[in-house]
Length: 388
Ligand SMILES: [Zn+2]
Image 1: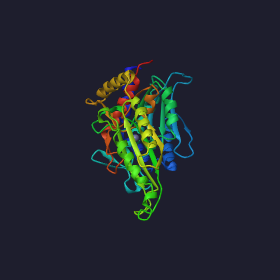
Image 2: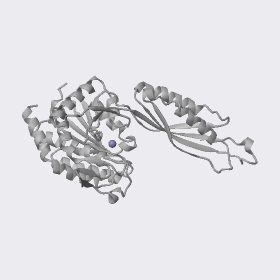
Image 3: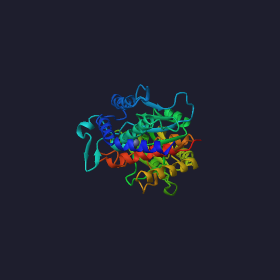
Image 4: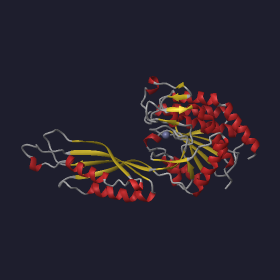
């Protein structure tokens, strides 16, 4: 790279502020909840239109149930160098009809709308950085862009694609929203999302109490035991956040179920706690009950290795040169796709998107003045990444 091409790239990105806001408005104004394949695919098409306009090769990897994975690449013909991967998701947690209620708006330099921060703005900077590197033929390595459509439901369809692309990459930049502090994310918890079912026996609780077996009674024991696995010092948390069960107030409960959210920091703690949960599910306190455990979804932790630390230092210096002088790395309890690529052994940084907050709520906001400097920082960091 020459410092000349860096100057051209960051100047061009500054000139694209309104174009980035316009693209953001277009994609926010399309409902794209994770289960809304048509909506998620429509957002994907809008991003593909951007790639086509910037002469960037793009294709889709189809999925029957969830949004197709959208791919794009900026590379010299025939290059077999390991690429840099720019990662992001375009699904949101919001139901169909949310856009009609609160379409994209800007007020006092903040943008609002479903998914505006998490993470449509991040995908917008990814695709504009790719366009800038293409325009000035400045990419030091091939640049791959991956835009998935099911992150908010634990990437149940995209995980193998993310792992495949992550394993093949030299480095992964994930533009989940920047922290409200302006910091990026250098570590994340892993998470396992589970359901358990308890089976008892129904009986009239007045006439036949002795022959009944209460699944709710057993569920209560299991909840207390599962919660007791929490270890705040180690960052291990267990939360049974949903329960249901029973038939009527005067029947011993034949059935009960609960949903468990398990988070951890150290990869080794996963097996220990999962083993303990399996034992709790398999062991009954109320005689005659049985139980089953189902794993519904999972994110792996983002752990910072030496390569990711060096990558962060390069990014931080790039941030200073883009006017973001106080930017630092932060640990987040929330999970994201960055954990999958880090677990492939590929250096990964997360939370590189424009700065926002109140994500997953109707108060979600995005600082629009952070769009250009975050795009410039990402471009500078890529241009300065060493050839390895
Ligand atoms: Zn997100």
